[in-house]
Length: 293
Image 1: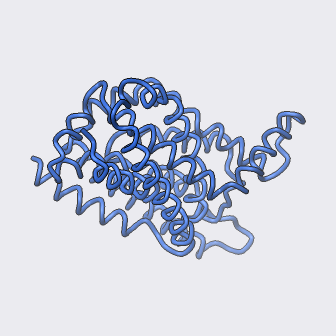
Image 2: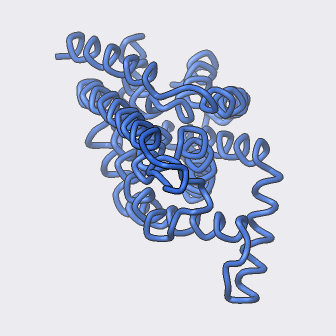
């Protein structure tokens, strides 16, 4: 059964790795195996277990932390969407951002609804998570390569030319937002980071690291919150029996860790890149493959 110590450690892990581009699901699969938490390992790959109820608490807490951090932004987005529905036009940056998020949320929402449980049961294995973690590192390196290439092009462009990599978030089209949403689907695989792959998709559309991270964190909020609310019966039903206090402790830890993480990362990506996270994923992934092979 889940202990308070395990719940808090896994809660902190969720709050940090959900936003850092290193995959929360991958770490939650690998770490319990390394620490010998066999009951947690078994529960992760079971079709029905207390771990399902635990995930509900972690997801809701992480989403609430993001909502609180971006509360003023979300207030503007909601007002913009309501106004846009009334006028049937997109007239402001907040309205456009709102519809970009709606469109980008649809692919992962639909696929997650249909396949999230199946993918979690099938791939919640340390070796699989380690392999996908290596893939995640390569994806992050690819994103930085795209950004560097765009910067080289921009240096060679005249001032009258708009170079790739010099775009702002409010210039994205709805189809481009949909493409970013499709990329987010792959985060259902343990080891592939939701924030990482959506940031790379944003970089591929010409955004810089700061705007890519901003869109990624906003996009994560409805997906994570919806996943938690949708699975609320797992928390309130038999799966939550005997572990609700542990879930509460882990959720509080996840919420605090998520808030501190997004606060740090929004500043970090104003001047820095994905490279350190890519190296981390490659090193940890390879070591984990050696350990579990």
